[in-house]
Length: 397
Image (tube, rainbow, N blue to C red; front, side):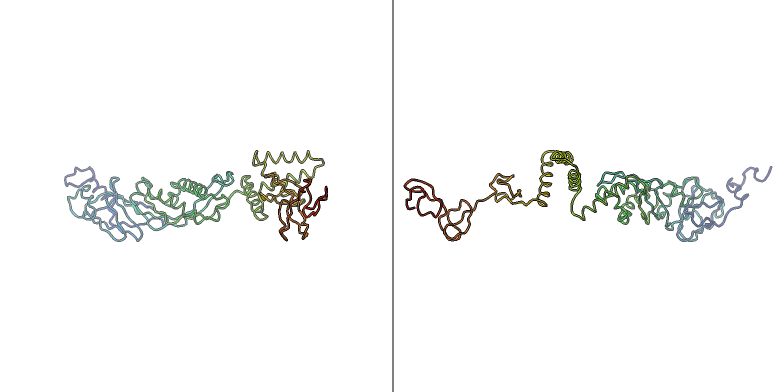
């Protein structure tokens, strides 16, 4: 029988003989790639007294049988039952100080990893809250992370893998980032009631909104989001909806500059078309009916046509204001089209001073003369104000 097939008469464990055959590691140190977030030490045969070296910004966790025994920060550590209490229960110690045992050592890099790129592979379709048009947008940016709960991250992300890097992070969280970014942007534009095309000017504020939503999700896995930026928000230039929205915004800006709205512009266009057609009042009536259908029924149509008439009258025909309700009426109206009051006020010339006074005034506003018609006491004929003798019988008035 070979050495390792002999009966165990000395109390030594199988782990001891396996480590003797393979060679027990007495010094553990990080030797993984520089960009690794998590790296597993390639050997698992150690002994009580093995030295564990942990660099700055690192954390090492010792596992045995899938159970985390303890974690170690930067510095040099001697593995012993004194600083690893759970090891006492898992390792036989018949020989005291140099008892071999098997375990796994994982290094977790806790430096901040910046400049991790993210982006939407396919456009995100969002409805513009102002114009109700579905607009596809693309967003790109970067974020930074730091492992702040190593055991949590190891349990939920690393699992049985031998290492973890930035690609591991992106693989697990790409969909989460895109989903949260999409929801955050959509909620923001609805709450703020802004156009989708205004988003590029609000990148800083949107970045903070998205970061607050993403932080909560990453924290569940022991990851701290140190920074999150949206670098660019753009739209496919050849997208029909984007073209329509841009044209609408350009038209609105033009109308704001010249001082009228879309409804008025359509009124002018319709009138111009009607004026260009040969014919009589039938064409104008058709134009009016078209305007009525476009602007609505009832009061809306009345208001629109009234405004249109006022605009035409103000440019081609003189108008006068009603002395009672102050509404503009054509100058040749005898009665107000709004309240029915008499529009044309007759003037009465004072027989004494010659000043004109409004009809119905009893006394002249200039000299006080009586302006009422004189009634003859003899024949009861009506004579003009200021007449001294009756025109019918000659009686002195």
